[in-house]
Length: 184
Image 1 (cartoon, rainbow, N blue to C red):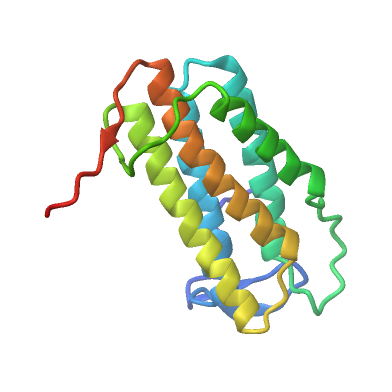
Image 2 (image 1 turned 60 degrees about the vertical axis):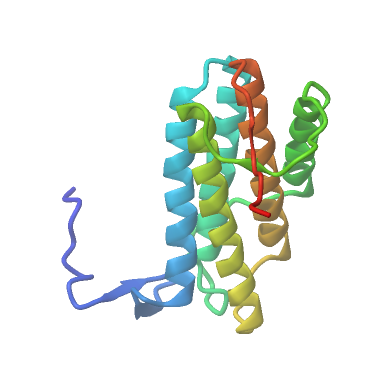
């Protein structure tokens, strides 16, 4: 099987269900950003020494494929493919991980600048891409394009997870957080 089909050479692509749309379509931009986030999480995982965190990230990457499949499906067409579902338990799992990491962290008393270690910085980049994906999901909703509400909730919670993961990673590496000190 060849990786290239040449069907996209004129700037169109197909959603799951067969509907052709421009590659600039908001739905394509949204699931493309989720795919970008997934790639960043692969890089974040590569920097992690904690096996449990690497396992969490693999699960999250799997859920992001589920999110991508949901976003790539034409909601008005009957797809012959079985698309996996996101579950409330997936959001709860993120919350549980956030709470467990937060329990080990010092209280946050200032805004934190990204940086201090490559692993921490990559968590923050992933968080920013996650926030962009969330904004695109909300934009879809505002444009009356179907999007599962749980997708927005999951992506929102994931950005929180990535912020806490950045702090947790820095704490584990004994890297001092960089406080933001605004000019007066």
